[in-house]
Image (cartoon, rainbow, N blue to C red; front, top):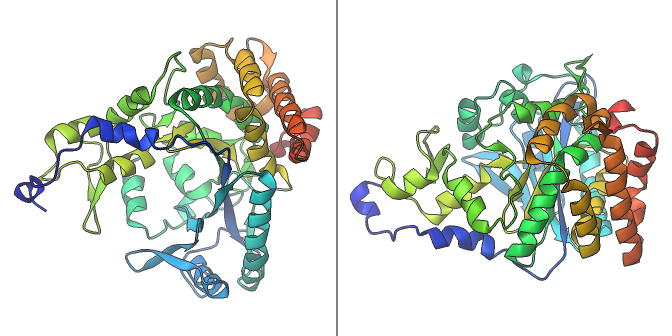
Length: 419
């Protein structure tokens, strides 16, 4: 496409950018979950490769035959599988991510994951691969993990400038939760409180202490990696201001440098040469901004909490042993009960932005032993978990049971990294 041809396209308008978030307003109260795990070879403990007779590509190919999953392709490479609203995708270091259709109940998420795992695990066993529930690869470091052959990952690897960006991309695995919002006001309330909670919840689920076969001295090396990935697109998207609107989030995205765009099946690298606002105003090498560029740009922004047509809460190490289901249960108890949301807001609202941001830098090393205003993070975590537990208990669906594993750990003043 050249510039003359692109003139026939209508100009992308600011209101179209806003509409991507306004359209997310809905009456449902579902919980979504993205669950990443690290595939390692049983015989060596090393991260499983993508290529080879017993590599991840062939594993996906065989799994797809079982229950009619469709391939997700990048050029000719299988980079994931899709079936209805569920997907199995690969992260840059071959981390396997299950993205589960949002459910009204946490039990629905658990049932779906266990259903997929029951079909996946026999194939994993045949291939000699385990999926481990850790926030970082405990043995293999990024220098020995080949980047997945997905075009956008090569561009991102070259662009992300933080000293631990390769660790983040190739070694780490996490759990993300999606929460619905019913209005702009509701979205911003949940968004701000989720941001305020993020360092505390990251601390609770710290589970990436061992990396490269040694104790790193950090409870969450994964969280440390995110701190050193790209400060222009990671961290907090806002300063938790009162009266924040969708426009504030849009404006933040507009001022963020772009990485690439897609055109006719090809990627065009911008490599941070301009912000999206500049791209909208002037174009780039004959290309003009369209709504798909905006969606891609928003998806290449990686804050602690990301606004989409739902609220995506991101910074939790991968955990297992039942702890993985306590994460969506925790947010369900807080976010879908107005009293619980207000109570959590009162506890967290006494802290200034700078204090919460500073805590982000202390949590990776100290976990729940970190302090804010001389108070241990563990004490605040217990308060937040109790609010969620009481909320779920009142709901009467027996979902408070999913919080029991994390309550047990907190009562021992421990995190998954400690055990």
